[in-house]
Length: 165
Image 1: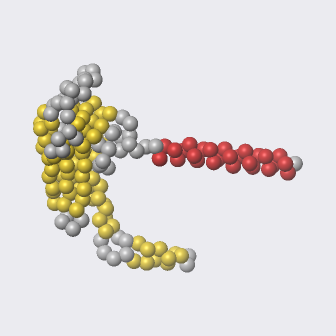
Image 2: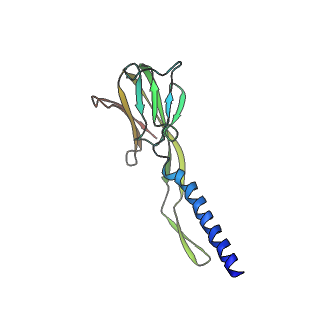
Image 3: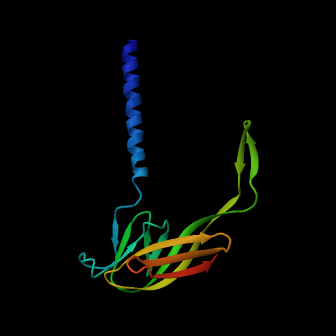
């Protein structure tokens, strides 16, 4: 009888471990996202006739002429050539004050008060057909600025803008 319980427990434990491994595999394989967001009507065009925006270097949401594209969902945006207004929106957590300590059931916890805000910055770029551009951004804590960059991966020319927050 004990042997049956032991076999049941082992098979249950292995099933549980397998389920956890399969569930966690999505977390580790989710970067970079494999999909491409095609932001023009009709069939897929050759790469020489479109503009490709590479979102792999940024963890932000962009709005291309008002259309929302998240780098958490898409690795690349395909566009027709032309002038575009691109708005960058990033969630920024800012610490306010010194950390403080709390005691709960004789366990010490360190807390730091922080607030989360959305930081935005706009840039207008004239994007050329057949070119691939890398989208990136950074937050400068000291200067209180959010800087965004659109870099041509062929010529390394970039369009940039820094916005105060």
